[in-house]
Image (cartoon, rainbow, N blue to C red; front, top):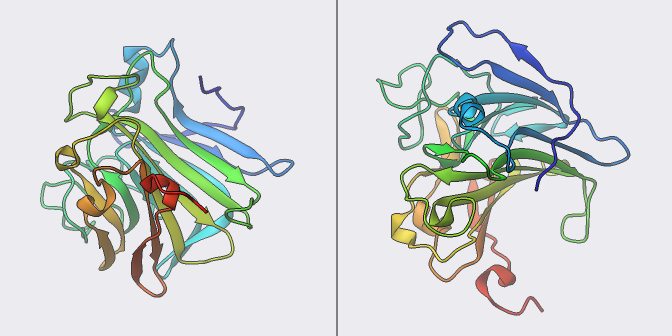
Length: 258
């Protein structure tokens, strides 16, 4: 079970009573550790709590800035539908349905909208499920053998509304677990990591993966992420060199890591 972290939380008043206010949190490390959950569930999570998280946004202040293309910010915005943004969203504009990148935030034409500089880790209609440990989280890591520099893990562990919740908890084959790994000392680069808990039919997974700083963008075909026979996929995106590379470790492929 995930434990709720002690963080400072305040609300930014929404312009419309129909929109969910943006949660405001700070992920500053203390003694080289920091963890927080903008949204987190457990065995006591209710339907009413889940309803307040649907399509919601959270603002998180990080300890070091994130750079994507020509935009740099220490403040990031997270959306329940698999979006990380460096630009403040208009919470009265829906993020669904998803559409191909790039998306002009000034001309969404009734479709889902993204803020100008955004990462779509898996942009689609995602949600928490009552009485499960579904969550969206931010974890600070001072560095380890695999990545010897400070970095953040910003992740989503949610359910795909378009897939039946059949199988193991929290939502069987509808479970979607993915994260952005953001290194401090490689500006413009991030790693996307998608993990599969159950055998999935890759053809059944839909959504948009990529990032943009409108009109610049880099897309990742969904079939390059969700491949049959894999346990996970890692993708390295470099917005300076403007490259996308499959950097999946051998253990994700069921191979000897040696």
